[in-house]
Amino acid sequence: MTTATDERLEGELRIAEHRLAAELADDRREFTAAVEHALDAWDALIERLQARAAMLGTAERAEAERAVADLRRRRLAIAESLAGVRAAMGEGWRDARKRVLAALDELKRKSDAAWRG
Image 1 (tube, helix red, strand yellow):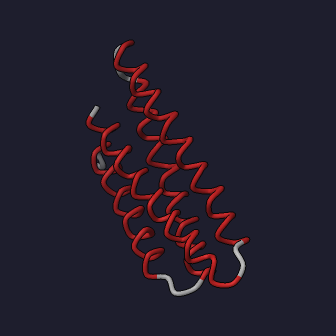
Image 2: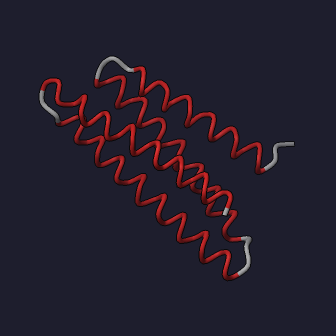
């Protein structure tokens, strides 16, 4: 039987795999595909956190829902930044790539804090 913790860990593992693939990608197409897969995995993990929040008491739920809203906002910002990677001219995509990777790392830090919260 799969527990909620197992599902969370499986989701985090998928995210980590896609994050690593993005970091190792040598070209724009590989990079954007890896980040898109990571964002899909983030969507599922954020939904799990939302479901967890729904089971909390009123004050705890409000705090957890604020964290979920922040994660969703950050996830959408990464998707917008990914559009910048696609639109960048020449090797300029590599600078945008650095920003996307940093934003993914910050999303992970915020997610870890939300799950502990």
